[in-house]
Every structure is written in structure tokens, then in C-alpha cells.
Amino acid sequence: MSEISHYSELWTHRTPKSRLLRWTGWVALVALFIWCWQLMTANTIWYFVTDAPRQAADIGSRMFPPSLAYIPELMVPLWDTINIATLGTVGGVVMAVPVAFLAARNTTPSATFLRPVALFIIVASRSINALIWALLLVAIIGPGLLAGIVAIALRSIGFIGKLLYEAIEEIDHRQVEAVSAIGASGAQILSFGIVPQITPAFWSISIFRWDINIRESTILGLVGAGGIGLKLQASLNTLAWSQVTTILILILGTVIVSEWVSSKVRRAII
Image (cartoon, rainbow, N blue to C red; front, side, top):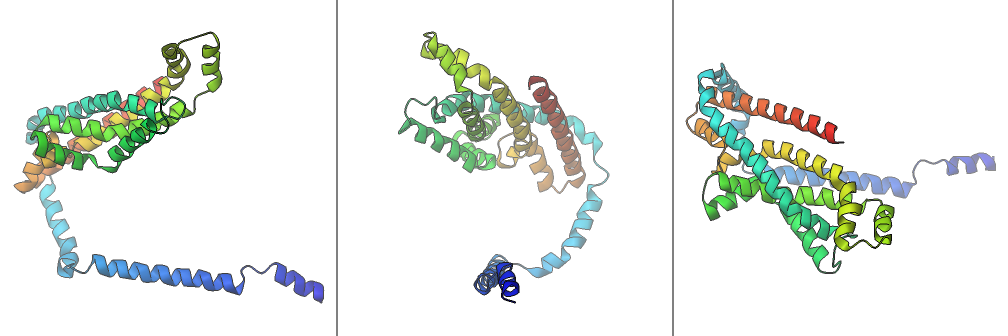
């Protein structure tokens, strides 16, 4: 009998204390959810919420059929969008490469000063959305394509820099030691010991970022940073829903093509 009671105590799923703590945690989580929900919906006009399906159906009926005659006017803005993404990616790569080498533990000249500065730049770039960068730059340098290009570049620094410095830290140090053993200089160690190992990762990261920038650059025109987003904003302001549909279809097609191109290029490189 004692063995049976010992066996049941041994295989108890949870102790009374752990069960109490578990239920207390669940009750606290539910209470937090209810409080957050009340806070977020305090100013909600529920009539608009209940009327949303009818409004969505009304707008949807106005969006079809798409205005195909509007497509010729979108070609130049679409080309501007692609240029924003491409030039912004190139600018981001140029700025991110030295930041990545400064952030990597095995290549930074100063782990106490330069590395924290480089990591701060990476975090700051990744923390601010491209749309916010564009909004700030439109206010500083004015509306146009330049603001969009710089916004994409600044946003890309953090993404490229983070992935690249992690690739630098993961290199095979035996190759670096072999190059150093024959008396190579610092530049030669970098050129023959480090760069060849990170080149595939560099191209893969850059192309992947370009693919992401195609998506992000399509909406920068909403804040005046050029591209097809300007046409989208104009169509929304004039309630030209058939034109909005055409723009959305064109954006979708562009994203699909960019995804296909980036996939093919990455596969060819890797």
C-alpha cells in the first residue's frame, strides 16, 4: 500500500501550489486582456463597426471592373518605384558594409567604442519604418524621389548590417589563420580570408533586401516620397476606386515578379 501511495505522489501532474499559480496567471492574463480591450475601444463608434460590411461591399462594387485605360499613366510612376527600391538598396549596402565590419566582434577595431556605435546604428535603422523615414526626409529635403531613395537606404542599413555582421562572426577562422600565417597584411587578410567566405551571404542578403524594398517603396508616395504611391494617394483622395484597383493589381504583379527574380538570382548565387 505504501508503494502505491508513493507511486501516486511521484506521478502527480502538478502540485496544488503550481496549479494555484497557473490559474492565478490565467486570471491575470484575462484581466489584462479585458483592460486593454476597454482601453483600445473606449472611443470606438460601434455603429461604424456594425456598418462596416455594408460599406466594404459598396466600395468593393465600385472597385470593379478595374480601369485598364489608366495603366499607361502608371508606367512612369512604377518605374520610379523600382528605381527608388534599387538605388535605395545600393545606398543601403554601401553604408551597411562598413557598419557590419565595425559591429562584428572578429573585425571591429574597437570592441569598447566602435562596436557599440555600429550596433546602435543598426538598431536605430531597424527601429524606424521606411514610411517614417520618408516622412522625416520629405520635411527636410522636400518631396520627390530623392526622399524616397534616402529613406529606403536608411531603412536598409539595419537589415543588411545585422545579417552581414552575423555572417562575418560565423566565418571559418582557420582560413583567416592560414592567410595570417604566411605574413599577409590586414588588407590581404580581409581580401583573401574574410571576403570570400561572406560573399554568398552578402549577395543573398542584398537581393533579399531589394525584394523587400520593392514592397516598401510602393507606399512611400503616400507621404510625398515619389513613386506609384502618389498615384494611389491621388486616386484615394478622388474616390476613383476603379483606378485604385488597377494600381493594386499592378503593385501585386510587380511584387510577384520581384519575388521571382530575387529567388532565381539567390538560387544562382548560392
